[in-house]
Each structure stands twice: as structure tokens, then as C-alpha cells.
Length: 239
Image (cartoon, rainbow, N blue to C red):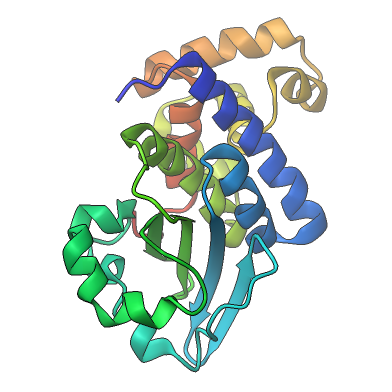
């Protein structure tokens, strides 16, 4: 789907903020701070799940059930059984009436009214699982919200499983070395001006390189180019 210019601007601002917050507060906290600002909702949460261990972050100071102690119930969430790597809403899977009958819905009621959430359950290269979602107390997520979440997802993966060699893994995209350098920093959320300063070239030169990159990758904008780059740099992640 084609997003509006305003939506792409929000995504661009979110990517810049994501990397800045990740540097100071860590990737999970950055994710739960960026999702409400970009997509909006009641509360967001993100976790990295390994056997017997869960690292967890939430956007608001609210008491939620312990994900380790309540893992059997947590695995009843409708999104868990959906295809790996997709961004799904509860409303994609169950009707409102059916949802209100489910054990998971009643399990969550003491903590929050969860009518819908938009999120991901994704296997990472190290075998851990990223679970991240934006929750709402009404079913008002748009398809544009899903697309925005999808554009942010490769950046989440990049923060949580940084590859050992960044530009080397871009070699298979058919780009020159300088184009790989530019695309690498764009995928890291840098603006044209920031990329130019890092590479000691003019911002206009960065723009020219990006136009050539778009043509070679068959994409229309920096967000889809960054998405292809991050997928190439994280080849073991399950999208």
C-alpha cells in the first residue's frame, strides 16, 4: 500500500528516534517508546524470549502478568499461531464476540482492556523470539498502521541482532561500494546530511547515490531501501 507523505515523515522521524533511544536506553525500551509516538495506542510492550528468560519492556508504568510465570497462557494469544514474520492484529484472527470468549482475554482483564493489538512474533538469528505490539482498547488500527509497523520492523531486528559485518553483507545487492556505504547509514536511520558528514561527501551526492540505489533495488523511497538492506544484513532472521 502507498503511504502518504506525512506517514513516511513519521516513519523517518521514528527511525531516527529509535536509534538515538537505543543508544541511551537500550533497544527494547526504544521500541516501546517509538511505537506509541508513531502508531498510537493505549500501551506498547516488547520482549525478547529465550528458554526460561524473558527481557521485557513496557511503555507505561502498568502492572502486567509475568511472561515467564504465565507462559502457557501467553502462548494462547491469537497472534502466536500466525505465520512467522507477519504483522498481525487480533482482529485479523478472531471476531470481537469470539475474542471476548477466549481465556486469554479474561486473563488480561485485571490488567487492561485489550480489544486489539498490532504486533509481531519473530524468530531472531540467535534463536530468541521478539514479541512486540501496540495495544488499543478499541479496534481502530488501519492498514496504514500495519505498513508503518512493517517498515519499522527491520530496524528493530537490526538493533536486537546486529550483524558482525554490515557493508560486506550488502555486496549481493548489486551496488557499488560507495552505494553500499550510503545505504548502510540510511538503514541505520541517518539523514542525508548525517550520512554526508560521516562519509565526508556533499548531501547532494548522497541524494544522487540514493536515486541510483532506488533504481537498482526496484524501490521508490529510503524506507523500502532500508528494509531491503536490513533484510540483507540479517539473512538468518525469519521475516
